[in-house]
Amino acid sequence: MTGVAEEAARLLVRFGRRYAAAVRLATLVPICAVALFRASPEHFAATASMVAVAAVWTCGYVWWLRRGRGDALLAPDVIVLLTLTASVTWTGALEDTNFGWSRLLVTFACVTWQWHTSLPVGAAVALVAGGGAAVIVAMAVPDPSVIRGNLWAVPAAALSRAAWTLLRQAADRADRMAAEAARARAAAQAAAAVRAEERELANALHDTAATTLLMVGTGQVRSDSAWLGPQARRDLDRLRSDSRRTPRPTDLVDLLRADLDAAQLSVEFDLPARLPLPAGVAAPIADAAREALTNVRRHSGTTRATVRLRGDSQSLRLDIIDEGKGFSLGDVPGHRRGIRESVRGRMTRIGGTATVVSAEGEGTRVRLEWPAGHD
Image (cartoon, rainbow, N blue to C red; front, side):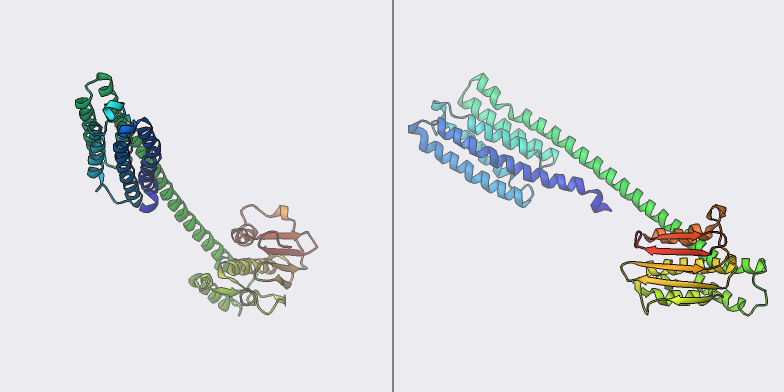
């Protein structure tokens, strides 16, 4: 989570170095062009040599910035810029009034340093370069207007640092918000997992021990029935075992036969030989079918049912059909879990659907489809 939470700040640091390199390189061409254009013929060669130094150094510095090599070249960068500024005294730039280009180089350097250095380092190099350039020009050209123009490098660097600080603060806020959102998502996922586990446990209890005990309590099964002992053991095995939740593919046909053979019904199976599915899909479908068969035994008034499976590992349709007394769907109490959770709920959670069609005196059909919308 730490890597994700610091992503904005990390990207901003990378952006700062790259943007500083881009600005230094983009401003180099027009600055050099101005220097050469304003140089007189007799001073052109000397000016061109200084322009060449500026171009070569800037390109090397940009390459270093793009490589992300730290701050090792900051001091040489300051020295080169001050040397270029001092060159006005021996290149004839004073006679041509052609020293503004070096001021621009220094100013853009002071501005862009703030995007990839710490505050103390950025302030120090800006003061040394900007202040040093102003002193050199003041000694060579004691003109107040020229001196004031060269002093703008330091305020420009301060404004650049202020803007960069605001960006860093925004990135830090974005990282904090991302971290909080990640923690909230993790908490929500954990809570959802707990709720899902509780829901599955409640469904398992409803489909196994609770149903068996209710059948005994209501007299549907005698307490001395030969079926009761093995069924109780099957219920306990299902509650204790997590083998049905393995990630390996599971044969739905095997699950249907294993579950439905214990339903105390005469079941007519119309199934393919095999139908492998992910365990997370096969087990809920088999559980929903088992609950549908349990409802046939408990409520339909018949001991016969048909289980018909069509489809493949990509889509399927499973029908549980009885010709019992049927019922009106509107008469089912809202608190009953059987159809709502153990059948429909299970299918919905795996992206499927469960449809119940029934009417009094006309039997019942429970259709399980996966994925939803399969015809």
